[in-house]
Each structure stands twice: as C-alpha cells, then as structure tokens.
Length: 194
Image (cartoon, rainbow, N blue to C red; front, side, top):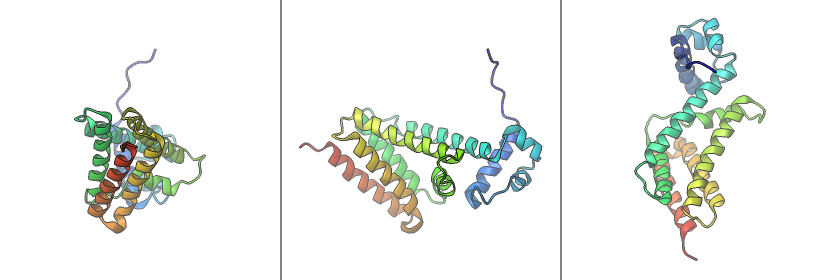
C-alpha cells in the first residue's frame, strides 16, 4: 500500500514551467537542458531528480497539457444536455481557442512536428492524446446517432487540426470561422435524414 502522493518540489515546478515556455518559443529539440536549468534557476541535479531525462520532462509537460485540455473541453460541454449539443459545444470551444490571439498553436502539434519517429516517447504521447481526442468526438457521434460516427470523427478531427495549423496564414478569426462553418456542414450532413 502506498502513502499519499508527495507534492512536486518547487524546483521541479520551476523547471517544468521554464521548459514549457522555452519549448513553445524555441522548439523542444532546440532547447538544451542547461538553458532550462538557467531559466528555472535550478541545477541539473534538481532537473534529473524530478525528471530522469529530457524525454521524461517533455512527456510530463505534454501529459499536463493533455489533462488541462481534457478538463477544459469537459467544462465547455458541461452546459450541453444532449450528445449532439455536446459535440457542437466541443467544436465551438475549439473554434474559440483557434480565435484566441497570441496563442502559439497546439503544443501537441508542435511536438508532433519535431518528433516523427513512432518509437520516440514524445511521438507516442502525442499520438495517444490525438487518438483520445478523436475517440471523444466519435463517442459523441455514436451517442448522437450519426450515420457514420467514424467518418464524422475523422472529418471533425481534421477540421480542428487544420484550423489550428491555418492560424498562421489565415489569421485567428478566419481560421476559427472556417472551422465553425466546416464543422456545421459536416455535422448537418452526418445527421441529415436520408
């Protein structure tokens, strides 16, 4: 039987926050452990005590991002009473995130761009998160009785990913508007009477 979970030491929190900011600004591969420690005002010993490797640090950051994202989506869907309303609320929450100024993009997509080897731990964390996000859409589509839940999940996942990526050249507002209109067409088609 294990005891209560110990709180993360302050050095580990500083390290994780510094790493998150540096990874977002410079990229994961371009950021060295020494720089993370310098910005966090921590020693390498503190870093390796909290995270056995840089990959473990990246995985911890992405796992925290995933948990925050999941909680945020659940909160966005909380007011919806039917599966279809929950699906629409999920899309609207993502469109609002796309429209938010100053957001650098999805940490998962940025990590995915840097780590393409399916055996790499970062790739696996991202793939697990993305599969889970798609599965959530599929589960809502099944509960709402879409004609083809898998197809709708694929289409909405691609629309969301595309809108996030398109922010750089369409701008936040146009990318969000495109996501809203595309998702509305896809959802309407998935539930249209034959």
